[in-house]
Length: 390
Image (cartoon, rainbow, N blue to C red; front, side):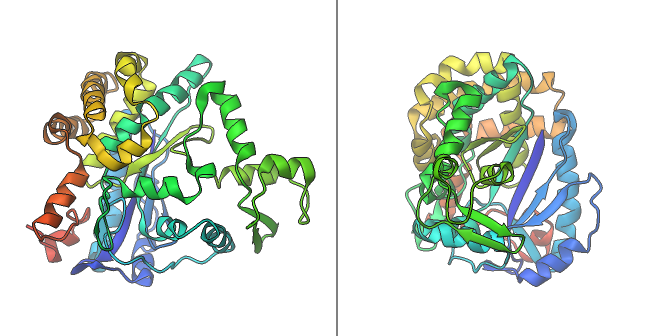
């Protein structure tokens, strides 16, 4: 398993204000190599992302936490708080990262509507990367990830508030992603099996951009599917295998294959809940006994992505499926020898949220309605120094 943690970087003294990008970049990059070899990157709106190497489940959460602590301490010293929210509850950020890819991507998304800018600049996710396995495991894990995806999205929904207040969604981030360009963000219809379904999806998706040089990326504002590009070409040329490889990086379904499975449906959630999301996702997809135990419970909620985004676990069917899934996960986690901190956090998450039909978004809504800032505590020690939300 690999874990990708993404945070909104905000001013430690005023979380409603983005942290200065130059200060974030300088403090983060000054850390140097992290002890567990996680990779540090930045998203277009200045979001900070930490990507662990692939590790066994019994070590993955501890390793990601160790690197997150080192990075977080460095940013805290620079007055930067790292906040885990799926969507920033304030004005849309400026785009601070400039590159030919992002320039062309923004132009393409602008042709689809305003949600692309929100997605690029103001959202943050937790991504769990899982081993595909081999042989029959590939199809089984592909299907298991799609089966359980809506339940995971609902259980860990954490983005109910936008600039003007509650949006009517528990996971506004997932709703934004789904609405950006459904041909490249909707779930893959896996009825044709893993290989056929992914090929059909990729060939039907519009080409976002064509790279005519290392520094020139041309957005295709007139829709052209990759399959049509193969069939009839374009004034910018005919596609190559390299173009196909690049096209696949511009597709963002909630479950994406890349030689492994990327689970992209999860909002960023604060410590320690990201440990729970990562570990539970892993065992429900990779542990065959756990997947078998929840299969019948997931049938009524399969493909209910929109309901998961809107309702979280307030939906009765999703709440019932979640209780079954987390019970199975709690049985499977000891088999995977998960670390004690993650196991204890999973039990606490079940008691605090799953058993009560709640998700982290409900805490944010409670804060909003009580007149408190709708931010969770920062994930780094800046909150101890300068940010007390009570």
